[in-house]
Image 1 (cartoon, rainbow, N blue to C red):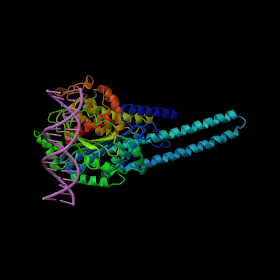
Image 2 (cartoon, rainbow, N blue to C red; image 1 turned 180 degrees about the vertical axis):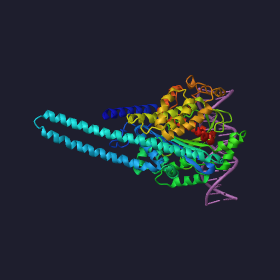
Image 3 (cartoon, rainbow, N blue to C red; image 1 turned 45 degrees about the horizontal axis):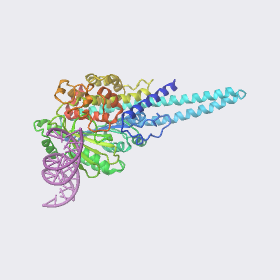
Image 4 (cartoon, rainbow, N blue to C red; image 1 turned 90 degrees about the vertical axis):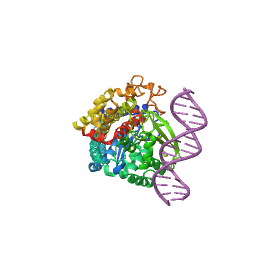
Length: 544
DNA sequence: CGCGTTTGACCCGCGC
DNA sequence: GCGCGGGTCAAACGCG
């Protein structure tokens, strides 16, 4: 029984590993050092894929800043999720962790007991070695079964907690989003990172330490450690004013434990923070040639989305077309920062900065600025949607494997499902969604729901079918989508990323789940689009 | 030849 | 006022 469950869990986990690894060409197994396998925990040795999505929504105006951390990864997923979730849920997160530890101890005790009992029985039947051996075997098996039972229990608990925590996070997020609707002069900054490297995670963690404190409860020390090695899907929001931001930068840079490497932090901070001083923004807007839409400009200028992704390629595939217009070496980071402009639409004000993380060169920090004044390419949109699904799927896989009988016991309430459904329906073109939706609703909990909400919004924009005809990208990604746009020189979602996809989108959906780059890119695209369009829309959407 | 990248120069904001 | 640093421009260059 429990043994069978256990097996199933392992299988699922392994499968997920495979998918992740296969999909991400740039994934570095070595970097994702397998965590020390804790007793009674999921086998993680084979789960090197780490993905951490950190989203920071910065509404500069009111100084509010939201940071969303979203970590996903197989075995690690749970760990990371637990962590982030725990953080999110100030109230019950703490005891949850403790409970787990306690369980572990319990398991050990029980096992011991079993072992001791077995020998005793054997002594009684000294004449029959056969019997004795059989009994020994039996006891051993029982022992194992007990162990497995405990493990299952624990896993179930973890999952439940994760789900619950996500809900809380979602609630908080929703609350936050409702607040600032009236504060215009805000800068929206989304920080999103995907990757599992310790440094990345560390940075994210460190970064969020302060601002996130409000949203997420502190994470246990051991969690912190785990966080570095584990992958996870975490989401956090934070808000801060320009000043706050600047201050934060300083703090981050000085924070010793944040990331041993100040340079890295710095790069991170620089990208994320802004150089978005109002005046600069003005220039930017003017330079962008978007004077036609003054009202939107303000919003555009304020929108920033940072994405950190483990990527070997020069840039991340985000489904848009970019043209490089500059490169500069920023102080504190030897890696040059590249400046790109969106060329999908002639006057699209969106720009992005790409810079490698000094600490971990495999990490690409991409900062999107502005809002697309055009629908996103199908690829981007689809990717965004699939990303959502992918995230859900990823999570689901884990959950399914560990909560086979738990039935996602902590399963999100119907409300959550309905919350997501709108989007899912809109973008259900991909069968992937259908399969993912249940996952999402079940496992993604708050974070997932939130994402979906945003994605739904974005999809709403770009999903408008015919509008795509005006743009270079093919209406149906599955048919010639890979042909790319702009003359088909390259896949429209391929801007040089190592993992440039060469398959049609529907297939991509599957790939995306396993490809951190695409996954993150899609998320970034979706978020940037959504947030860019304007947080209000998102907020209002949320109301739905 | 067209398009995108490279790269040095320039502009502007900010801190001292 | 000056220097520093980030961001942008635009001519030169390379590639298909």
